[in-house]
Amino acid sequence: MEALTKVLISYLISIGWAIVAAISMSLSMGILLKVYDMMTPIDEWEEIRKGNIACGIIMAAVVLAFGIVVALAIASPDIPTSLDLTIKSAMPTP
Image (tube, rainbow, N blue to C red; front, side, top):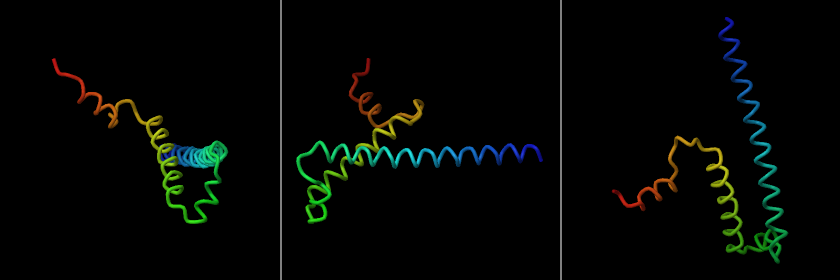
């Protein structure tokens, strides 16, 4: 019974950290979009509301780039990324 309790506590701790990660990711995404909006001379959200597809594509690219950076930051060093594979394939073999 004690082993089951340890497993359940471990699951609860993992769920807690997942909630913390989701909240911090949401906050950092909001900060990123706000800073990006302040850096550009136009109001992106107003342009998107007007139907400017190009502005929507740029905002989507910013979100995707943020996701790629976060994914590479938390990836295990044992798992090769596509960048690692590209660099290794470009290197000459002896």
